[in-house]
Length: 140
Image (cartoon, rainbow, N blue to C red):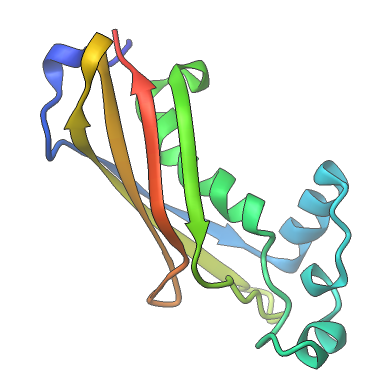
């Protein structure tokens, strides 16, 4: 069932989600995206270039965050704009547990033509990892 513009208001909260990230997840994403930068899989290299550990791909983090919106909408095609600023990396330790990306979202503005802006907050390890994370979506 599609979300109706008439059902939402500024402040409407989307269901929060948690997304686990393991080293295996990063290898799978590297294969799918073609991004084999060693900072995403080689701990020694990542530390040598000043990172705390292997880090998740920024585009992977961005993709996980928008899932809160697409799951709420039930239609990924309803997303008409999406943008973020990468503010902090998501370190993924090789401990079997990895990391978790926590994402919340809420309707921040009602726009013309039955569109709304959804603002997202993505954190990992208690730190905000995406800034200015916003999506404009077309509602029914």
